Image 1 (cartoon, each protein chain N blue to C red):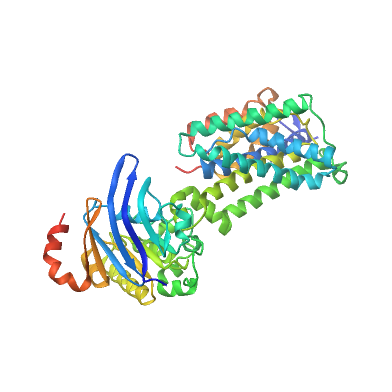
Image 2: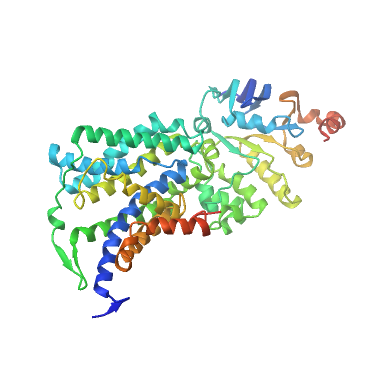
Amino acid sequence: MSVELLRITDLHAFYGESHILHGVDLRVDRGEVVILLGRNGAGRTTTLKAIMGLVGSRSGSIMINGVEASDLPPHKIARLGVGYCPEERGIYSSLTTEENLMLPPLVGSGGMSLEEIYGMFPNLAERRATQGTRLSGGEQQMLALARILRTGAKLLLLDEISEGLAPVIVQALSRTIQTLRQKGYTILLVEQNFRFALPLADRFYVMEHGQVVEGFSASELPAKMSALQAQLAV
Amino acid sequence: MTTVFGVPLAVILGQLMLGLVNGAFYALLSLGLAVIFGLMGVVNFAHGALYALGAFAALLGMKWLGLNYWVALLAAPAAVAVLGLAAERALLRHVYKLPPLYGLLLTFGLALVIEGTLFQLFGSSGDSYPVPEALRGAWNLGFMILPIYRGWVILASIVVCTGVWFVIERTRLGATLRAARENGALLQSFGVNVPLLFAATYGGGAALAALAGVLAAPVILVTPHMGSSLVIVVFAVVVIGGMGSILGAIVSGLGLGLIEGFTKVVYPEASNVIVFVIMAVVLILRPAGLFGKE
């Protein structure tokens, strides 16, 4: 088994006429938590969507677990063991909480059981029969995350999961990510919230104008801090 | 004798019962349309032709292969489902991203091709299908003599409609279908083969139309164009129930059959237009239909 779980080389992505990604290069190793930093519009969300095949068109190489995924349809990419949690959370209003949870098919072995998930997110157990979109914002975020833990996916693509949530929920999510990391999940996280992201990550990439402009490890962070603050300030 | 509006009650009940038989067909056909429209956003103008195809499949199965009615009840919808699946893969899947008009025109063309082919092969005079042995005879309900076969049609339609409703609203497969209609792209990113789900749905909708065709074969003349006038009423039923609403299609199908039957008693001249009058009123008061959302 190689160390490398995801390698993206010279990835370009387009929505119709607009060229969003201009040659993204990045790598995520097995068991790592890697965070994509950048301003809004830098192309971080599009990078995750492009990995899943949810953009208009793309070129370049996306190797997932040694398989070239750039010419596969989304359902086959998921079956390589990828779980995607979109920025808008994507909770289905026509499904109950539990139906939402049970919706994604298994894409690998060793996913969490329903009991384990309810143990991790007791709120969801209480509200299992409630319509998915009637949950609070925080509960919906937990549901969107829990939904891809059941499937056996080992590579999780998480987009802005702390966005718009109360600090206490953000802390709970942070603990969840740490637990997932201990369990051996590999996570590529798009994040705006510095305080949420910093303690979690092994490595960081910074994106600008549809490209990765910088990559560094957690140990290099303190020296970079002030430059980053300026770079990412809106 | 009891009378209502000067009409004997027995006559009213008799007409209501016949209305319910028509309603059973409306419900089955509008259910298939609702399933297809709900998931795929395609207004399936080929539905009437698929209904005729179901009846022909039963007829030819009997003539050529000696298949009896009960086998036809399963085999004809299965055969038409395969055809629907093939049509979806070959043609229909190319129009999902285009405006709805393209799907409508394509299925309309498909209807012309199917009906034209049946006409070329078998002519327009039509043929009749015998009522199966076990369902011959009639029940005396007191207020009317109900042919057993018509009672069977009502029963079969209600059972099938309830079954389809249950699958869509209460099972995991149904949850997947509901998710596909809400956000198919995300569902596909979870690993569900959504294109295959679309093809299977069209096949399933086609099978429902064909099943209605087999049920209808013993009570009407089987002709290539048997579906073309019926399908217009069925579209009105779907609009009244709410485009894409499963429950709406079933309830308004049966309900409008009853209303049509009742109209035949109190004002027969209006019985052919009552469904469309109701449709107009519903569109004014509740543009999304009785069970539609928004």
